[in-house]
Image 1 (tube, rainbow over the protein chains, first blue to last red):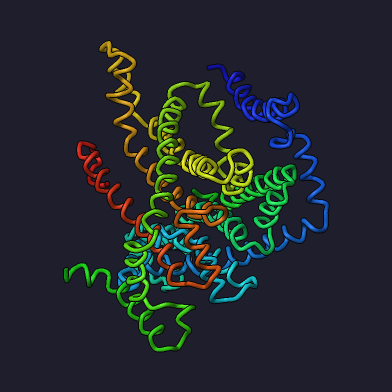
Image 2: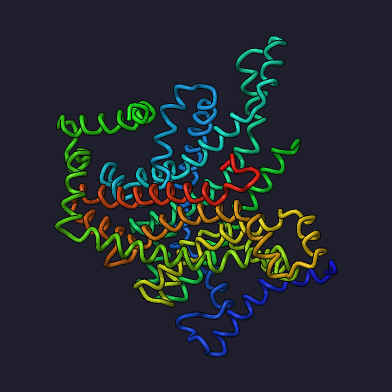
Length: 249
Length: 252
């Protein structure tokens, strides 16, 4: 296929999707109460972002997400790397991780709220827990895959333990860690939204579901557009950071 | 037996500490019911109450959604690898759709399909579709061209190439995608039932959390996780069987 054609198809399919959405709704094929036109929803999202009420919820979600995600990163990557270095820790953690990985983490929010009350703490904790497994496992695999000959030759040249960790093991496991971070990113968004939709108090998930329950379907679509935008935005940021950090790969 | 115990010693240790803490009266039994009580409650619910019914509802939704996603996703992924126009028209949609948290679509699905089975099946379908399509696509793309060419030059029919070469050789990747889809759909079915449902394991968890019957909460989340573990094990076993012929079989 010609290159021009390929570009055409690439641009065309999302455009077709949006035109279809707009058209079906405007033509009345699907009632605009159920599916408001794309442009109307987009306009609604712009209005929402500008409104004080919505920014409060957006801020609440982002703040909890940022804290939870950072804690999980700081906590789990060292644990994962240490798991690769210490057989004892591996033997202890590995069965626990295998047994707990199918547990729906966002579903733990009622239990966590039972323990920690209704504030931000359980909502941050659930994010930490949700990202923990993919991050630990990727850090473990990354550190496990480092060539031992590299470590040996570094040691033979008299490099200290700490330098081995920071200059060899960490950089060499970064590509694997980044793929884990990408998975954790996707999971963290599910956990944030899911837990807020379950424990309806504040945040984007709450706002989204609230608009549905109040029958403000237009607003539901507008919030959905914003959420999708956030997901895409984070993915782009992630790719940029990864390209910068992994420049040597 | 002894080997299993020493391998999983940490799990037993955690369960033991859990039991000890909640029996000691250190924390209120509502906050952390003893493991033994949860197990007993599980059997009570199973035999005398509606645990089996709730599990059935959840499994029905999950497997229909996951099954549909597999039926649609695998052919789609293969078509993406075989036909350039399918690939270039679907790739942008997939890379746009992948980072979007699909659980956010759930309210919209409720608007369209109501709060009963359909909206949940649709959500599971969407969630599981992405990993399955992406894995199948990358698998079918990796099938060696030479194999296809030599089959073609020997006059093998298109359909036969698909069934005898492309499908078997992309199988490892398809399995990987299905495994991801399996876990994702388990999580999503439970969440969607917690958010809006009148039956299913997620509903059981939610309704018991409102009245602080924490034992039942642990039973619900334990049942879905146990099923996840069970399906995953069965799946891994099937995969080993199915990929015996594969040159890299030792990896699976």
